[in-house]
Length: 342
Image (cartoon, rainbow, N blue to C red; front, side, top):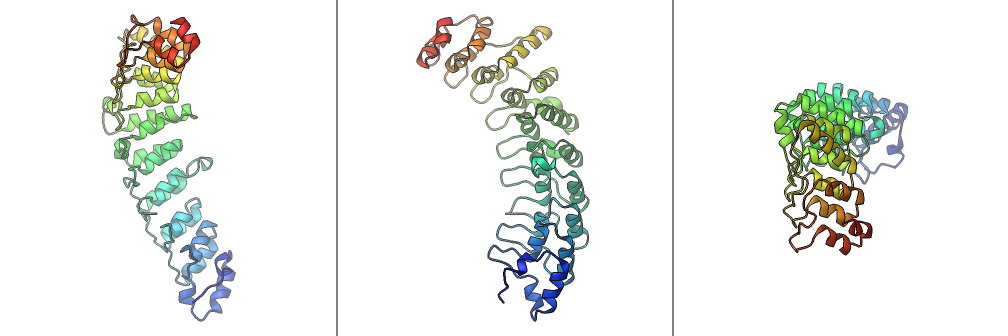
């Protein structure tokens, strides 16, 4: 049976009743799909037309219909609390239905657009209906990972308390939720709040989380360095993060800050080291090409950092694998002011 496009544009319960009352094949029409696999229940859910959903359910529509993208009405309605509640409580749809084989409704709600602030009310409704919070996407992210990456503080806090083991869940690349939080570039206060919350509620020790490395060897401290989150760095260092730890190619937070040009990060570390009498390894070469932080800073032309490091290193003449000094690198990359200083 062919169905006109007008059927899929219905947005009132009255129109549904009228069309179905005049149709000889109501059972087929109510579940008819367009070329993308969308039934009217998908359009109604997407447009938050609760009255249409109620009418369709009354006439036997499949409230768990799946379109070509693997989305069910629950996925489509995820930013409407009343539609979500109706589908869960009255229609008894699967709260853990997967979209394209890996995204659950809770993941979508927790990740929903930053402008929506995260839909904590909807996440709670899904959890109350039995949502499983340890489900992961194809790349290993849980609903907690997704809420954190969008900076949704309250949603992340709620998910962590409901499923503490998600705090220590890693993505396929080995990333913890705290690392994703620490990497938030444009929201330093949010980053600090989420990271401190997760560290406080984790089912393992603080030292275990601080020592965790993803598959690139990066830990939460290095993420905070790259995002230039000074408050978070202060928090992590004061709670035992080791500033001399390195990634898989031997680069510490000093290497990374020197490369990127984050002088304030290095100054913070120097103050903390002086206050706590820490031994900081300012001039250790990495294991990739034997570049020291000074070499990285020289290559990038970060003169202020070069000056800062020279004051703290005994060997400006240290050479890399190819026998080049920091000054040589500055000359090669035409960093004239750096080369002149060195």
